[in-house]
Amino acid sequence: MRLWWILLASYVFYGWWDPRFLAIIMISTFMDFNFGKLIGATEDKSKRRTYLIFSMIMNLGFLGFFKYFNFFIDSFVSMMQAFGFNPSISTLQIMLPIGISFYTFQSLSYTIDIYRREIPVERDMLKFAAFIALFPQLVAGPIVRARDLLPQMETDKKFDWDNFNSGLGRILWGFFKKVAIADSLAPFVDQCWADPSKFSSSHLLIGVIFYSFQIYCDFSGYSDIAIGLARIMGYRFVENFKTPYFSQSFSEFWTRWHISLSSWLRDYLYIPLGGNRHGKVHTYKNNMITMLLGGLWHGANLAFIFWGFLHGVYLIIQRITTPIWRKFVQIVRMPAFLNSAICIVIVYALTVVAWIYFRSGSMGHSSFTVANSIIGRILSLEDFTWYSVLNKYQVLKGVFLLAIMLAVEITNQRVSWNVSQLQRPALRIALFVSVLWLIALFGTFSANSFIYFQF
Image (cartoon, rainbow, N blue to C red):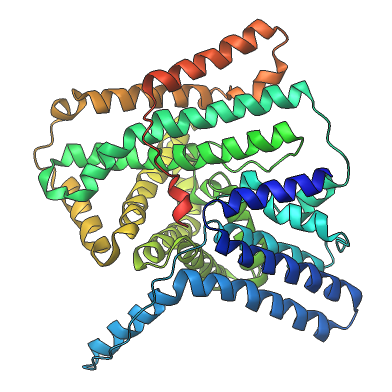
């Protein structure tokens, strides 16, 4: 009954937006459940590979049609026009099914793991369907793999106060990051991207810094809410963020940012391509392919692909320069804290540059123009005056809220991790009330959807 209730509630939740798209998730679930059984039932390598290929064609076919059909048609038309042809190909008005990027990768990981003999075949269709559709992570992750979640569905779940306390704390912390921080930063950020020519370089610099935290608080806030909801129900989801902006290298950044996606790309793309096992050139190539496809996963726009390209370049440059930097640090006897601080600042600054193109990716054909305009105006230092920007209420409010968030996360005192350890109920209540007060006082209640819903 528990699994039936989870499945029914999850399908109602998903279908509430548009019931037509329930057919896609149902088809993917049914087909991958049976492909998994077929792969597990034979030792013939060619047959197993054939079944896996069919599974990949189905999943990536759905994803490719709904997400990339118009992108490839428009790209083809642009290429033809560059050669002097003028084809009249009309594109379809295709609506992207919400969450398809997430549950497609989740379902694919199951058949791939069965093919690799890393997990047992799931024989219970109900359990598998509930695993795919479980509503907290369905529309924007984390991408929970079968090896992590299916075993948790073997046993009944009973109400547990520790789970409730820690889960509720995690949910509140997620809403604080989303409603109080991300949505408060959004209007300032939107102004900067709407018309960069209207603003000074200092204004735009604050805007791009705010965007880096807007997307972090928005997406990690969603992950916190999903993890908290699952915790209340008795399930454990993987962590999706671990203070990524304090990374000292780009390889470390990708072990802290959108961990469920970056680990998926590592295990199912980068390592099968050869990883770092076949020399430097092949390692650079594999890094670049992985990051380009990671960019394409985010959206059908050249700006997203360029964002992935930049991170590929960053990873390659890091591999080349790391030995040189380590020697330099030893020669000048640089203190460890200074070395760490310099690395953090460099990684963060270059990450922000990439975010400028990422944010511009939703602006269609003008995405590169807008991104280049923002970068150009910032580098020009035109009208660079901190006072004119920092005295604005929007900016002061954003800085204050970010200081609270960073203070909590830097000291590793995240609300959700510690609530269940507080022995006195009065302390738990005080903690909940404090976060609710911050949400009520600073929250922007304008029904802004989560940024990653578009992917």
